[in-house]
Image: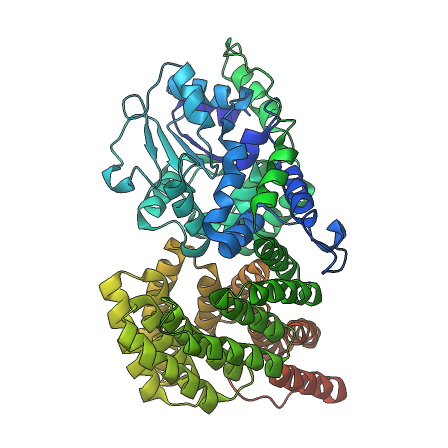
Length: 606
């Protein structure tokens, strides 16, 4: 604690805060678990006898992030009223203590993932005004005005705030598109310069831990984690072992930590503004009223989405079918077409390609029929063709997938949507790669690259560079491939595309193997595995663990070979990758029989 206090005295600390800070007593806002339970109860209360009785036990314990992402992706702007619960912006002792430290020049920066302005309210109580005594950077206040030379305290709001729908909309977009270059620049500056303390870790660390640990320079004083949840502590420790950074973990509450800090700094805890206990006895009623105002189709769609995220596909299909019946009854053609598309994704996850294809065909038939009367029909038709191509791709029907993608491409070229056009070129490139058409892959990638650069679509540009780099590997151009992988990975980090980051680690390991750097390759595979495991990309993780098994075999570690092959097989089976599962089973059988493998191909790229 003395070392920590010394850094505070030297104005050398940055705090990372999660939403948990704002649900700390005595605000009595619903915490994440309470919010989740009340929302599920409100939605379940709307179900009628047309669907089987659903139990709350069907729904897994989700993080607030997962819940918010599912709400936003399924209902869009209809979810905004839900978050009015958190607009009370009631400060608590933690906010006031942090504000006091900022006001007394001992805390230069706070980085928060909260969606409220509690800290700003606490600073106002210290007679500090935003834009005058300190600066806030969020979706509204663009970071382009930021400079390392700014001497006044800074609040970097990674997710924006709940002040209005526009800000919330942009904050939610972080789940899909990451933080953006401007915020990453400030974040990286803070990690380079300051001793970091992470409070309320449930949201902070899972979201940022790979970026923090990957970019943390040796010169950084260190990171202190204040956390009581043993699951979060285990997650942190697991990540640390892959990155090798020393991080101190203190198992105490945020309030206890701040009280000890004041004592160590030699300050008596000041007379801070009292926080009147704020209760919300009606938030259950509020959510119930919100659910009652939704259409039953929306309620079923919401529950189906949550069950899908929970992996309860059979129940999700039943709810989609119930919403489909209502949409047909109401002659809502566009809604019917969309539900068929969503049902197709569920069938695909259950490895029922014929039913998935049938659902998409029905969606396509409706959209074609009402092409003139439904304004969004043409764009949706193009999207259906992409999804038909995906079904064929998953079944390893490369020619069929290419044909469907080209149907989508023809429409996209007429519509002129640059983002979907770039996506279509990328899908075509992936399909061509499976057919070993290197020149064709590079041709599609070049077109995708041109669009992405013109639209500043960095997310797809990173994937495009990754694809081109793979072709360089096939052509034995390892130096060029490595350079492109690094560029792609930096872009993916900056925009939160963690899946691509993990896949690039896997691909970089293949180049390390070319240099006979077995230890370096192993570390890269470990990093890829922990990232893809964390985000639930089982198909990607299966590739990584298969590659790790082959690396272990080349090092004569038969136990490690078997262990990683078994893990790869489990993930392949969980995602219905039949061809991969069969190949891994053959390798395991061969290993059991001969303690040897005849596998001669190189590592699989992703």
